[in-house]
Length: 389
Ligand SMILES: [Fe+2]
Image (cartoon, helix red, strand yellow):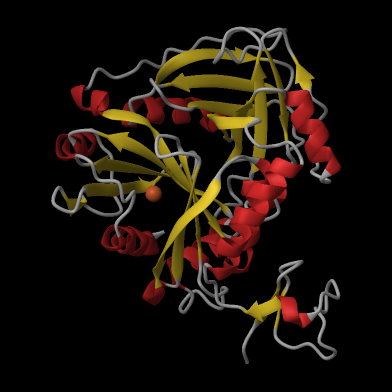
């Protein structure tokens, strides 16, 4: 039997008796057969663009400022160590306050990476982490995408009018003001917003203690080839793809850009962009919902096993052949060898999943004036390689 999805509440169902969605009562003329396509998203781009203008959001949110990765306390140091060893990021600063220990990693022209662990047990993301292959790391996930805003109090006032729920009130410090949403029910990740007052990129709160570590950045030449955070890919359930992307568009100034379908792997790679130069937000989902591990393909199987979460962080990489060899020589294992070619404009690879963060590293080299962002053949090979997870 064909599946239907409600265009209003996104409930997926197989049968309705009275022509209405069984969950919210929406009339079925606004439902559509459930197999993801881009029609619904494309129809909503102008609607959301106009909506952002109408409520005063247009231009208020800028690019990605940082991502926050929370780890188990005992893995925080290992996480810092592996990112220093496997990327071009360098140590920024470390501090602890009453709730968290935090280490800030930095790279030129890039969003920062904040590695945190909790000092208290209350974790609003906990329930998203309790999945068959993730429950042994119940506090581990990329928890927040933090975007810079020009006027945080105005932003929060507008979004509260839209019933957006935040984890706290605005946290004001001398240097910045910050807030983050409750975890999105579609991606298990929060959206954070920061307004800088003085020194952009200094995350020290007003009251903190420094903590030192003896972790050093290795002096490997190939690490200099690994540059900024290019994109992340969040894996979501097939039924939540449209809702996750539309939610992201309502909270930021990003727009859905394009999608690549890999039908035989039941997978769609969806790209949302702010501009061609900015960090790109990628959502990957099934075309149809999870049914079983044997039949559902690697994308839906991943969300079943690990929950909806960030699957990989991609780093823009020069001299990718040398870099790939250098990483291998220094102990990194990969899900797939280097794929693509200079002729096609793109080479990429995936590392294995980090045991400390459950995140894969992607290394990506775009050649010359390649402006396609991805190629279908690479997306297909990379998706297939994640069957090993
Ligand atoms: Fe990617």
